[in-house]
Image (tube, rainbow, N blue to C red; front, side):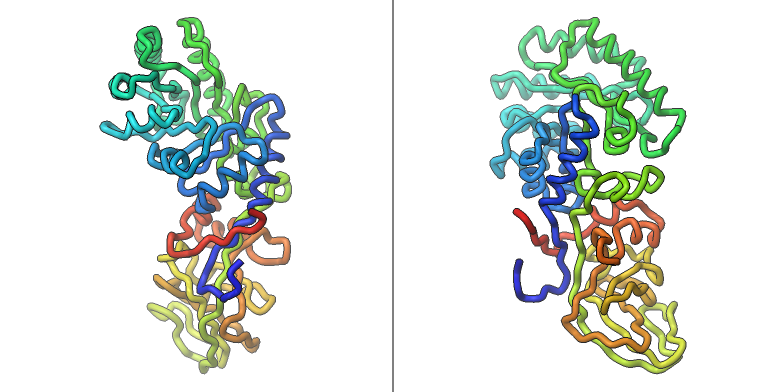
Length: 378
């Protein structure tokens, strides 16, 4: 690690990523595991985390956009990679030539991938997505026969190879939600129809992180794990990271930029929503919402400074925020820990999520591009 203190940086423990992949594989021992590295691996760094996940036995990688998947290939990463968020006139041919698995939810997408396969002079690997109730991407049951028929015909002509049938849960992170068995039943029905029509998928999958952890009946041939790979609980209702056997991989740190004493009645940050009760010491933390610190956590976000957890004092600004030290003193250059695994009493991403009224997924993913990632155990 760089010995020069940095303004702010995210420390990524790749051993934690590996440990999480192994723990998730143990939850689904008869299934392959896809490590989802979309959105720069939920803010952790796609290339480094993809390699760590593969080291630990992830046999598939997943991204949202084709550009993310193509970047992995450009970095020299092999193995099956699936991407699922397509728009018309996307980089279909590049995806076919890179041997990516392309999700297809509608006939228009199948038509575009067929044209790309003709141009590339090789069959495209496609996975048919069923909308079993999430209502986002995926083919509705009423349109499934048309899509399956067209895909089987395209496979017969040699332009595609149907490698998978898949879907995605809406509420697997809510234990006992009635939509879960309904979606699972719909997936089984749509899968059975596709197989009756001649589809022989390599992988069938619907389980995301929470389903991998709690719904063994949903595991099929492959489980897709995203946030859990990075050691963040997919939902507080399911348990903390520790209770689920996961280790958070990201620790967000900053160097204190300034410490000063101010009198009582002194306003702090924009709008003076925080006013000091008496003479106190303030520490300036040089990170703000341009770095991914949620402004919604103003007056609430927890930060460990000088061995104590304190709260953001006043509004989070674009580049900085303040904490009130009371009578304590720290020095410029001392370390502030915004969140980490929590093993040493520091706040966690979940603590910040509660302070900002959001989910921990967003806290780690939104850490911005001007925050360097520093890797441990590479």
